Amino acid sequence: ITLLLLFSLTGCFVRFYIEPQITDGEFPFVLEYEMNGRRYLIEDTVICTYDGYDMSDNKFDLRDIDNDGNEELILVYTTTYMAGMAEIIYDYDADTDSVREQFIEFPGVTHFDNGILKADWSHNQGLAGRVWPYTLYQYNPNEDTYKAIAMVDAWDKSLSDKYYDGNSFPDDVDKDGDGIVYYIMKADEYEPENPVDFAEYQQWIDSYTKDAEVVEGSCVELTLENILNVK
Image 1 (cartoon, one colour):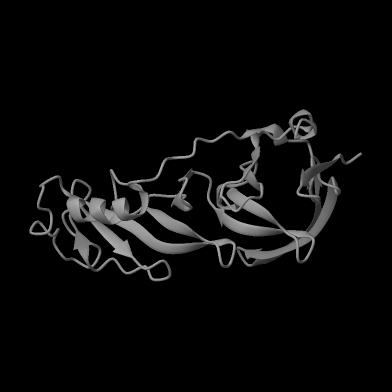
Image 2: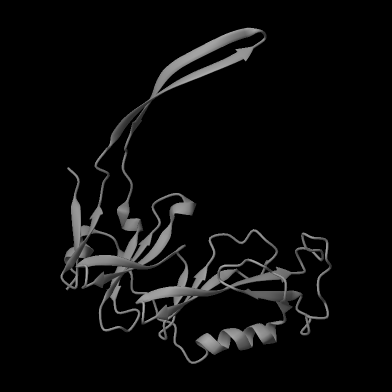
C-alpha cells in the first residue's frame, strides 16, 4: 500500500508518496530490421516491476529561509537520475491556500542569511577547472520568490591556453597570474565575452555576500519518523 506522507506547512499539506502508485508495467515493442538481404521481425513485451528505493536518501527541512515570517519547506531530492535531482523551496500561499514553488535548482545550494542563494551547476564540463560555475539568486520580497541575477563561469589556463573559438588565454586580464579568469554574465544569457581577474570578481561577489552569513543546513532524512516529528 502506498504510504502518503503529509507535511504540515502553515495549515497546508504537501504530499509525498514513499512508493509509486503504479509498480508494474508492460511495454510491447516491435523491432524490424534487415541483415544480409533478409528481413527480421521481433515482437516482444518488456515487463518492468518496481523493486524499491530508499526515500531516506532525500532530505527536508522546515525553516524561514527567506525571512518573511513564514516557514518554507526545503526539499533536497536525489533519488533519481542526475538531471532530475533538485533542491526545491516551497512556500505557503495564503491567497490560493496552496503550496507554491519559490526556487528549484540542482542540489548543492549555499544559503546566505540576506536572501542570496549560490547554486552550483550540476556539471563542470567546460574550461572552469578549479572554479565551479554557478548561478546567483536573490530573494525578491515583492514577488516572494528567488530571481536569478547572474551566472559565473571561468577559464582555467591549466586546462587549455586556447578557448573553443581559438582565442588565446587573456594573460593581460589575469593580473594576479593564477591562470584563471572569471566571466560574470546575465542570468539569461550565457555569453563568456568579458573576462575579469579574481580581484574584480571578488569585489562583485562581495557586494552580495560580504556582510552575510552562510545558513548552515539542518536538513534531515525524508522518513516517516522525521515527518511526524515536525512541530
